[in-house]
Image 1 (tube, helix red, strand yellow):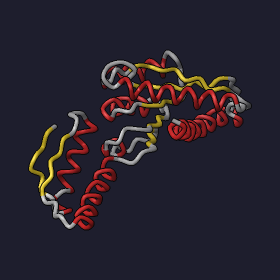
Image 2 (cartoon, helix red, strand yellow; image 1 turned 180 degrees about the vertical axis):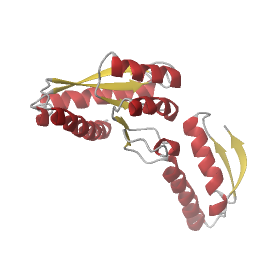
Image 3 (cartoon, helix red, strand yellow; image 1 turned 45 degrees about the vertical axis):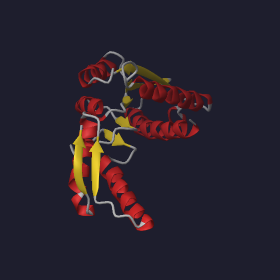
Length: 213
């Protein structure tokens, strides 16, 4: 848990550097900086979303207890959460509500690549920085978005590492691995990973004989 909290603190620091610069440019004095957080807090993906929410709240508590945002005179952080339900359309609506009704100046989220893919264009349109800590689809960083920041490796790097691992196993065991099966969840995240596996397998000398989305 401490590793997760540390990662969230790093992500919040990156986000606050961007927002602090924006306030400084406008010469504004603020006591509270409101940040949006869109995560699956209900439905099948809720355990992941709730875990991230708890880590964020702990990180915010630690930052605020240590003087808040010092570059803004000690302003406190307030994170306003919205439930994406794991649904891309719900996530998009939540992003619009947080920006216009809650007036957040930046956004965190949203674990699932499919929901991040609908939140990011909204943030881009309204020039709201979005820092993502968990969505790994390669496509998310291929749109040229200026307000989207990702802190985790993408699926291409993960899949390459898996093939390198299989090659290492064959060297150490002496047993030749020629055929593999792939199984992945049927959303943007899983499909992207599946596409990379299919593309890279022949390059590493493997034949895919089972393909189950």
